[in-house]
Length: 204
Picture 1 (cartoon, helix red, strand yellow):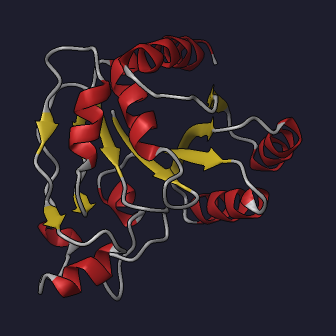
Picture 2 (cartoon, helix red, strand yellow; picture 1 turned 180 degrees about the horizontal axis):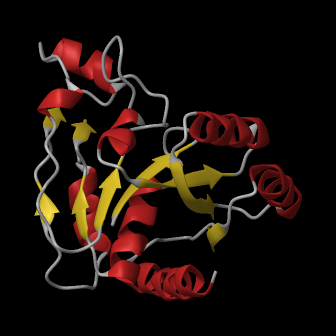
C-alpha cells in the first residue's frame, strides 16, 4: 500500500508522522520533493530504530526552503508530475508531501496530486492552533470532493479535545493517532507512538 502523508499546513509534523508510520508498518520512505536542508529523509533516518528501511532518492532536491514552485524557479528547474516515477518496493511505501496539501508544484499542479497519481491512501496531519478547525475541515472537504482515499487523521501537538471532537464530527474519518507535545522527539518516542498506531490501524 502507498500512504501519502500530508498536512493542513507547513511544519505540522509530517516528518515525525512518517517516521512513526515506517516503524508501525515496516515500510520504506520516499520524499519526492525536498525544498531546503537538512532533508526530511535525514531526519526520518535519525528517528528510526528499524533496520532495513529503504530510503528512496528525491525526484527533486531543491536548495531553498520555500514552496516547491518558488524553490524550483530559483534553481532554474521546472517540476513536472509526469517526470516523478514511483519507486519499486514490495513493502508499504510512506510518501511524504511538501508543506500543506494545496502547496503548488508549478502553475497547474499541487502537492496533493502526487497522492492521486500514485493511488495513495491519504493520512492528514492536523496540528492544533487557533484556526486549525477551519484549515482541517477545508483540507478534508477538498480531499472528499476530489475523491481521494482518506485513511485517517493524526493529531499532533498540545491536545485540544474540543477542536479534535468537532473536526472528527464533521470529517467522519477515523483518528489514527494523537501525538503529544514532546520535549524531544527521538527513537524511543517514535517507537512508543508506532506501537499505538499499529494497534489502532489494525483494530479500527
